Image (cartoon, rainbow, N blue to C red; front, side):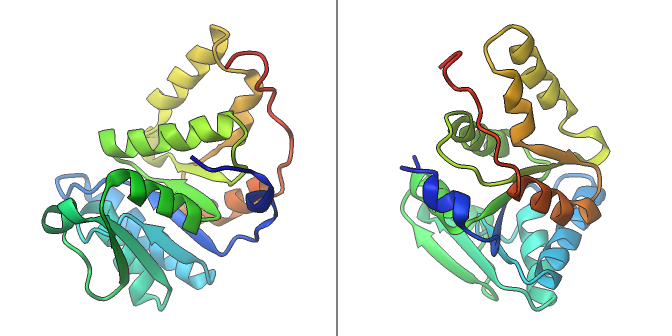
Length: 203
C-alpha cells in the first residue's frame, strides 16, 4: 500500500500503467485497441508499464508501444513466466509474487488505463480504486469502456453510492472513455483534478 499522496500528486505524467486481460480467446476488437493504445502512448513519449506478458491484450499493447519506438517496462511474477510468456524485446523485471508485481507497477506509474479484462484485472483495479478512495494517491485512473464493457462495473459503483457505502465524490476520481483516441486527453483532465474526497463519511 502506498504511504503518501504528496509525491504522487506532484509528479508529471511520464509513465502509464495498463491493466488488461491476458487471454487470447477474446474479440479481436479488444486486441486491436490495446495495440493502438500502445502506439498512442509511444507517440506521446509516455512509457508503458504493464504486467510483462506476451499474450492477450497485455502482449498487444506492449508490441504496439515497442513497434512505435516507445519505452516499455514489464513486471512479471516468476510463477507466471511460462503461462504469460515474456516478451524478449522489451525490458522486463521478474519479481517473486503478485503483491510485489502490483506494488511495483503502481510505483512505476503516474497514471493508469484499465482495458477490458477478467477477474485478475478487476482485482487490480479494485485495489487501485480502494487506495484512491482512502486518499492514498491521486494518480489518474482511466477506463477504456470499449463497447460498454465496463458499464456493469460502473452500475455497481453507482449502486454502492446510492446505498450510502461510497461517497458521491468518488465518481469523480476516475474517468471513462469510449475510444482509444480519448485516453490521453482524459489523463490530462484528471491530472489537473485536485478536489479532496470526503473519506470521513464511511470507511
